[in-house]
Image (cartoon, rainbow, N blue to C red; front, side):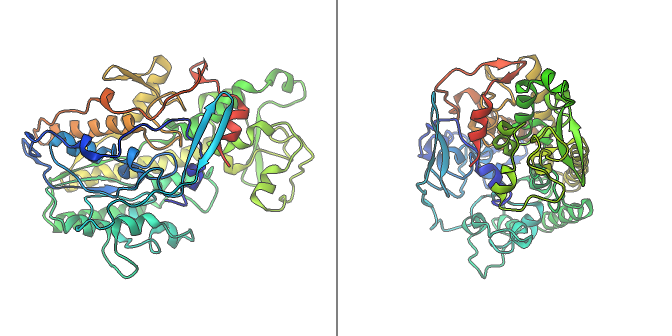
Length: 478
């Protein structure tokens, strides 16, 4: 997923990070022993991807990753949990904002260090940024993970977390089960559809075939059954991309910022975009209401709408395709349309949602087959998104929305949760654990978790959306 999330790693973080690197603040009171009801979390392992690892803002770093939901669950159960720890600002640097007024960006080019490379046992948190469902069952290093096998660059997180070296043969599920866990959390499959969505539905990054996804989860179920771990865990499903700000930010900004009345006089009725070998039009209502979703990558090119430009193709270092005339108004003329890779249109949204629905049915059946609890993250995010239009959703007295920058739920990459977003997710896991296993583990006080966003200036809203100047959105990407 590192390649998959290279799009996201380019995004800017309008936040100041304040958090202690000392994990002791996540150590639970000693009076708790990891057991409640029929649940035993004394030796919990977690399988997943960047969401499980605690990845934020383009990299993995301790002041954010220490609030990943597995660690928060462990704290509430009164146990500690091991996992990869990388000092700030993480691997590959972290994009940050120096100021909002004037809007000034910089890239923190310092590289953090691995703090626990000599940990003597396998990590309990086996969430690997970039992992697909295939990887839980089959990957052993950075060169044979799904993204590398598909032609991408090696994903170093596999080597750092699995620690197999170049000759090791242990997969995440094997490393998890060899620890003889008393409890398992599994949240995987997001990347099996997210790559398709973040690319604007451009081939070849299609969602994982349903039959393949089913086969993988059958394999995971067989491994859990063979290890005698049925009934000792929970699994989470996949949220819809229509609920995350990576897809819900730029389109409304275009809809609200474009002089449509003037353009209609010239025959322009909406954003003209590539669809297959032809073009289609997304009118302002469809952009505002999310029937067509412009990705955050599109923030680099939204300011160029109406200009006679071929900058998109120059940026990619490719020749202007046949049939494209860059002397025509960009995005407002069928011969210079908005690129397909920067929009997930209504047909592609249907493809994405169909894949997610099929995947979630497989995950639900998996939960039944191994007697795991099912954490419905899809419903959680969908409900929060719906409440955006009626004032937001309250958690421990704090109002959250899915809104980019100001909502508090998602970090500024538009996909990964903030620290407090991780706490909300942890509570969904704990609720299912308590219900499924007659346990009484306390919920996380979301308001006590450090927020990820501190604003240097006021942000205004219109129709529920933050009014961020298009020129500011243009600087969200390199």
